Structure formats: structure tokens, C-alpha cells
Amino acid sequence: MLIRPCPWRSVQLHQLWLPRQIHTRETIHDKRWPGWQVVVGIEVHAQIKSRRKLFSGASLPSNRSQSFTSCPGEIPNTTVSAFDSAFPGTLPVRPTSPVLPACNLTSRNTIFTSDLPAGYQITQRYSPLASGGYIKLSKGDVAVGITQIQLEQDTAKSTFDGLRQSPEEAADYVRTLQAVLRCVGSSDGNMEQGSFRCDVNVSVNKHGQPYGTRCEIKNLNSVKFMMMAITSEVFRHIELLESGHSVPQDTRGFDENKAETFKLRSKADSPDYRYMPDPNIPPLLISEEYIETIRKTMPDLPDATRARLLNLGLSGRDTDVLMAVDSGREVGFDGELGKGARDPRVVVNWMRHELLGQLTARKETFSDNPVSVEQLGELIDLVQDGKITGTSGKSLLKHIIANRSLSAPSVLAQEFSLEAVSEDDNAITRSWCVEAIEALPEEAEAVRQGNPRVLNKLVGKVMQLSRGRADARNARVVLEDVLRR
Image 1 (cartoon, rainbow, N blue to C red):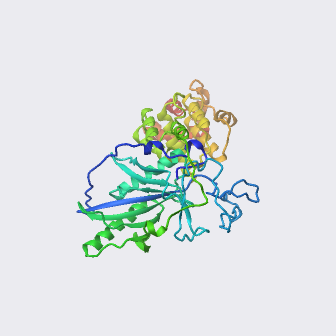
Image 2: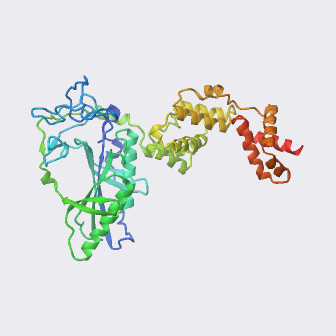
Image 3: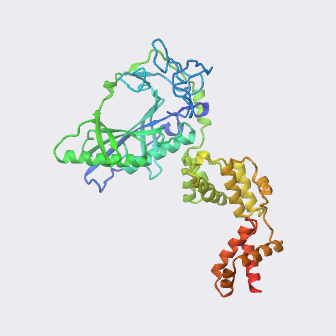
């Protein structure tokens, strides 16, 4: 799961698995189901951010050295090797790149798997990448235990202890884990596109009583639907138990339109999967030196990034916005520590209201952002130094996004004649003000009659005539002077 083709990101997040004392807490008493305790366990399936196919190392007609997944627009089934199709006699191959440096011992899940050509799944049930850790949630002093993290053919899986006690806590956990995976680049965490999904195990019991029978809800692909599914399943369990019935151990799906779960099949336990060691993939031993190198080169995790942004003087709201942009991934406004003298609050304002606003208007996300850190930084500097106005800056930003321009904002400002008119050059500003008054005589007369709010419309006309080059505050002063005469 936590593997990608970069050696410094290819091993487990050591901060999460170092032995520490996990915080213990009291049982939650929820008013929605008084007297009942809810236990939620979550299996998260996160697709590795790599185009290489797992264990598929055969050469292809395209002279590729390894089997890759298809790119958008490619003809289907043209990147399929003999191993991918499970031809008799083909063997799995460990990739030569560091995609799998931590692939220890593998086993086969031999229960029939209809969507894999071989009919079985290569997994790490008994030799996971990591086990016995925890992750701290973003709200409250709550730590969720991690049973293990393992690599699987098709999609990786993380299995976690059942320590969530409400739908909201489960949602917080999923968002926190999603942020960690995106931060280190091991997965894009896109639930809508299926690269990040959850299987949820739900059980209920009376306070102080043993845990109840759990049911699993498969393939939930949004946090909202996960919360709805947990809530629906909790009420279903309570209704069964209060009516004197037992809860059968089922594997269930979730109907989003009806907001209720439905039975798929009876729940399979571990013996039903008939795990066996994979005879074709030998174990791989990893040195302590290699692991220590990974630990020293790990990027900051979301908690550390959030603390650094707050230390820069940003508000909690601004920090939340930045962290929500791909969970902080590729947000380069704070650059490297110790460099740059820009006011962080000014930069965040440009990112929140201008950059993200224009991307949203184009129905694009931050991952589609064509504006480089250097371009945005220079644009902000031009506005702050008074070389262009804020209006011109917004126009330049819109041009860069729409045209995917690589030119520097200073070059574009000269090309489009958007340099700001200085306050000392009132002659040009005055001519625009006179033209604005002639174009809007009724508004001009209203200002003369004592209605100052109409002056804003005249200022807007001046900005339109100057194509954003005039300073709005100076234009207001000049307009008031001309109207008094």
C-alpha cells in the first residue's frame, strides 16, 4: 500500500509505527442509540501510485521492459502480458524498480477470485509491510490502532483495529489516512475514481457486554456514503437484537438511493480463504541501513505541515483550505523553509480567492493548476510593489490559466501594456476620469447631489477604460476632485 517508484517513499511511514503508548479513552455514549456501543473497523484499499503492474515483468511488443497499465486514450488490452492473462507456465516477477523493496513473504489467497485471470490473489496476509501501529485523528486526542498494512495483487489493503465508535469518527479516520497517503505520494487517494475505497465492519453491543457479530459493507467510495452506511447498519443491528433475533455475519452492499445496506453473501472468515505460501516468489531481506535511510528522508506528514503553516501566522481557516487542496500535496506557497519574504497571508489570499476561485470557475481542481510557484510569486510581487494593479494581476492570472502560459508575469504585463499608472502621473488618470463622467452623466450628477455610493460605479468605469492600469484609490480621489469643479 505505502509503496511507489521512489526509494525514499517506498516503505511504511515510520512515524506511525514506532512503538508508542496509544491514548485510551472512555466509551462514547451516543444519543442516537442510547445504551448501545458501536464498534467500526475499516479496511482501506489504496491503489499504489504507479503504472507498473504488480508481479508482471514480461517484455511487451512495445519494447517495454515491464508491463504497464494503459494510459487514457490507449487501445484496450494492448498492454497485457502472458502473466497478466494467467497463461499456463508464466511466473510472477518482482519488479526491478524500487516499487516493491519491502515485499517480504507473499502468500496466495486461494478462494476463487473472479476478477483475476489466475482465479487467486497474491497477498501478504502473514508477512505484512507493517503491523501493530496507530494513527492519530485530526479531532481530539484519539489514536486508532492499525492491525497491519499489506500489499495485494490488484489493490493494496490496510486492515485496522475496530476502535472507531461513531460514523463521524470513522470519517475523520479515513480523511486523516487519505491525507497521509497523499502527503508521501504513495496514492492519489481519489475515492470518486476508485483508487481509494473502504470496506467497513460494523457491530453493536450493550455497554459492558462482549462485542457483537460484525457485518462487512463492501466498496464504499465516498466519506458521505460511508457515514450513511454505518448509521444504517447500526440501526439494522439494534432493530434485530431488540426484536430477539441474532445478527447473521453477512457481507453487504450499500444502496445509495435507499440509504440502506443489502446482503451480498454470507461472511467468509480467514480459513475460508485458504492462504498458502506463494512458491514462485522468494522472500526479500531488507537491511536496517536501508530502512534508516528511508526514515531520515521522509517528507513532513500533515500534522507537521499544519504546524508550520500556523507558525507562519496563517489563521486556522486559511491553513485548513491549504491542507484541503489535495491534502497539502503540491502546495508550494511556503516553499523551502527560510526562503522568501512574502507575507504568507497575502499569498494565501491570492491562492484561496484568486487561484482556486478561477480554477473552480473552469471546473478544474488544483491538480490541473498550470501556474508555477515562480509565476504566482512574481505576480504577487508585482502587485505588492505597485508595478501592476490587483485588477491587472487577476487578469494576468486568468490568462496564464486559460492559455497554460509559461511566460513570466512581468513579460506578460509589458506585452499587454498592463503596467500600473503611478499616482504622480495624474494627467492620464484624470483623462480617464473625465471620460468616465462623460460616459455616465446620470451617475456623475447623483454624486454631485450628495450620493457618494454611486461613485463606485464611476471608479469601475475608470478601471474599465484603463484596462486595470489605474489605481482604484487614486482614481476615486481624482474623480471627487473633477466632480467638485
